[in-house]
Image 1 (cartoon, helix red, strand yellow):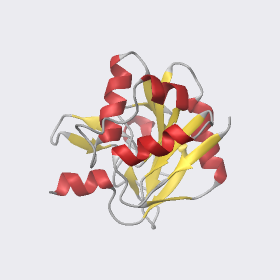
Image 2 (cartoon, one colour; image 1 turned 90 degrees about the vertical axis):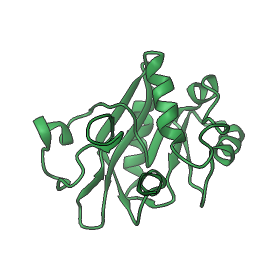
Image 3 (tube, rainbow, N blue to C red; image 1 turned 120 degrees about the horizontal axis):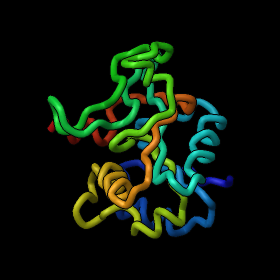
Image 4 (cartoon, rainbow, N blue to C red; image 1 turned 180 degrees about the vertical axis):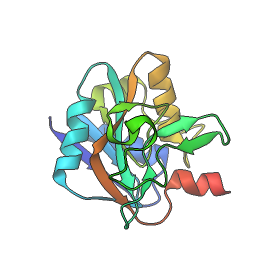
Length: 173
């Protein structure tokens, strides 16, 4: 599949929607400004999964510079409202029930999110009215899940994060 990476500094939902509407590729891959792509293969891994009709969005394993997982999918509920799956595990650690090394479903993905362009358009993209400054990717994932689409974590697509993501900054405030 052909894909477009959309990575903008200080991106809002509104500006990401505008960029997404300019592209004609099959898959859109939104990358938080704090995240770096390790390889083209990781992007292709996400794009291939995003093309499946029963998948709404797919995200990868986001590591720090030392190879420790910062984000392996989003879990809603529990001790905090928003929790990062597999956080603190080594990138080679199997995690809880081996899930850090398996392709599986989560409430949401953030940091890097791949979605079919037609699906993004069908769901009217990110909600710029209510989530313009952040959490828009989590909101989109919840809307996709509500319509029966899967939100997938793919541990074979690895990325490196430098500093905090937009979601982490919001959660700290």
